[in-house]
Amino acid sequence: MNQPDHIIYICTGSKCDKKGGKECYKKGKKIIKSSKSKNVEIIRTECTDRCKLAPVACYQPENKWMLMYKQDEILAKVLHLVKKES
Ligand code: FES
Image (tube, rainbow, N blue to C red; front, side, top):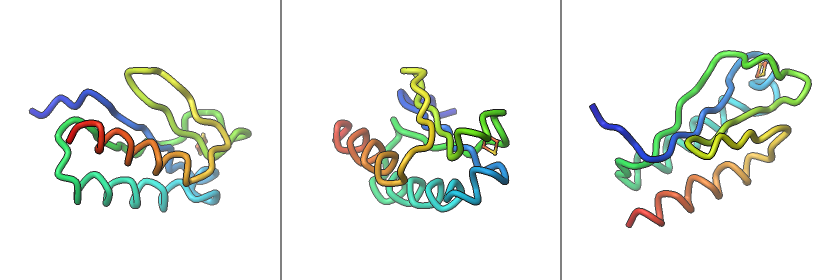
């Protein structure tokens, strides 16, 4: 099993999805897939009970929560991590 150094959890529960959660997940996944990165993974989650702060994401292992994020912030982080690897 692959054990990536970095995981970005994206909430795709209904409140976050209304604010672009699923779209952000799909775009991030596409970036990682095209980079062939083995060290970065993006995982969708169900509601994390932070709906008032939607959309919500979390970086691990930093344990940094991104609340009311802009999609570009997440995608920039994904790009940064996959570039760091190469
Ligand atoms: S739907 Fe994302 S925190 Fe509830």
